[in-house]
Amino acid sequence: MTQVDFYQIDSSEDPLVFTCRLIEKVYRLGHQIHVHTSSEAEANSLDALLWGFKAAAFIPHARVTADARAPILICHEAIPDRHQDVLINLNPGIPEFFSRFNRVAEIVPKDDEKRASARDSFRFYKARGYALKYHKMAG
Image 1 (tube, rainbow, N blue to C red):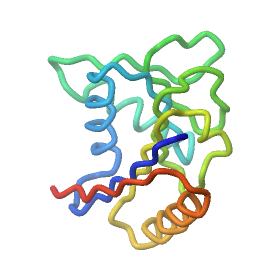
Image 2 (cartoon, rainbow, N blue to C red):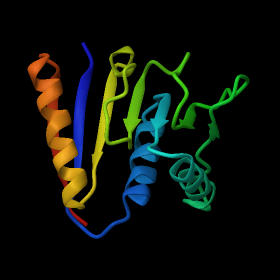
Image 3 (cartoon, rainbow, N blue to C red):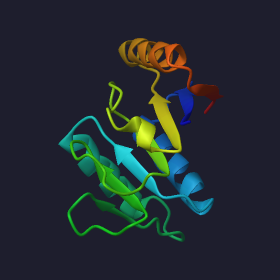
């Protein structure tokens, strides 16, 4: 069954910068990652941030296309046909395909509206018996 981790950002850190740090950590542990964003603009921003995130450590990633083969894929609409390992969800809703992944990372920004959405997601997963972990991330 899918393990779901909530990462509550308790600082002024930009959620996309936090996501880059999480992506790097998960990638360095040997996992493939599918990042589900809330919009095309957010996908573009994350893509740009990852290109320059760390000058000394390239994080191989790509936008989802039919021929994309990177270990980290970014999209906001596509249903993944690969990467059944880790899903990082930046979308306020729960993707219908989440249970195909071994792990789901839900990013919870400091914004009150987004925290309310994360509480709804937490209740959804809990009511269905998914293993949940909650991490408070201080700056």
